[in-house]
Image 1 (tube, rainbow, N blue to C red):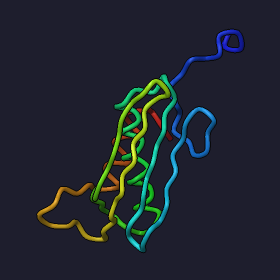
Image 2 (cartoon, rainbow, N blue to C red; image 1 turned 180 degrees about the horizontal axis):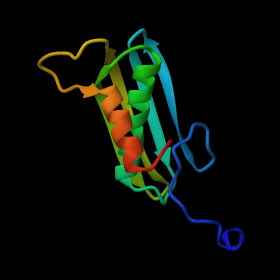
Image 3 (cartoon, rainbow, N blue to C red; image 1 turned 90 degrees about the horizontal axis):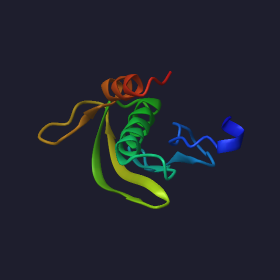
Length: 116
């Protein structure tokens, strides 16, 4: 049945996918640009959550435990939804600024979407 209908599905969590994906660029030892683009069937909440998930993963992969969003942009169009965050990673939780615990966020988003 899927072959006949084209399987209309939201973008899965993946890198380099034809139906949407995430990317990241390292600008400094602790500064990264994280981007996620979804297909037309991916709602904004999922796009935002997957951008946050990739931000958390990048922090953990580079030995950091927390991150802040320095600047960001997100939106939707007929082509799908997309979000991009410039994040700064920290070893210790920064004070007096909104920050995210990378391990907690990763676990939370993966549980929400039943990801491994």
